[in-house]
Length: 212
Image (cartoon, rainbow, N blue to C red):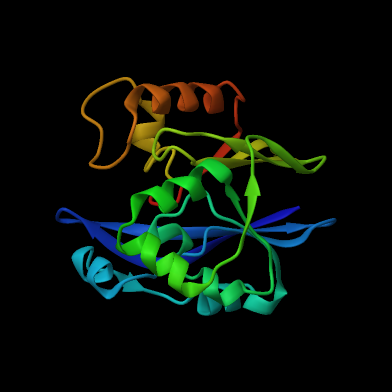
């Protein structure tokens, strides 16, 4: 199993520029698994966050890959900066928690309307799912009600792809201290429980979407 980080541009939260990363897992059994696809969606949302976008095709090309090579997409959740380039992968299953899909149906906001209009078809996951003996999805609600993370067992040990379960390493390491970044937790108590469950896996490496 090999892991490649994708540089998908950046966005601004308040006055701070935050990177946007996706991840490719080159898996012997599953093929090219993509975790999160970067920014996209309604123009007003992209303007609000001053998104400087990079296409997922260009990011994949850095590693000698193209969108057609991707065999599976896992969206940690359905915010615009994690599922925004899903339309490039109409040929691949898009895995998302059922609870997350239900959330966007309830939300009736600009992003959910954009997702519906795009015609995305999701494969819905209920809680944990083993994709292979060394790769699985786990529910990690709190940032959103249907957030999920990905757990890989590699030569290093456990590696986590945590989406927005923690924006940054500082949040991951100091979850119980200080004020949380804007938007970090839709439900703070549920979020803290999810983070505790992820930490209990004793990961050797954590892959962040908005940190270097």
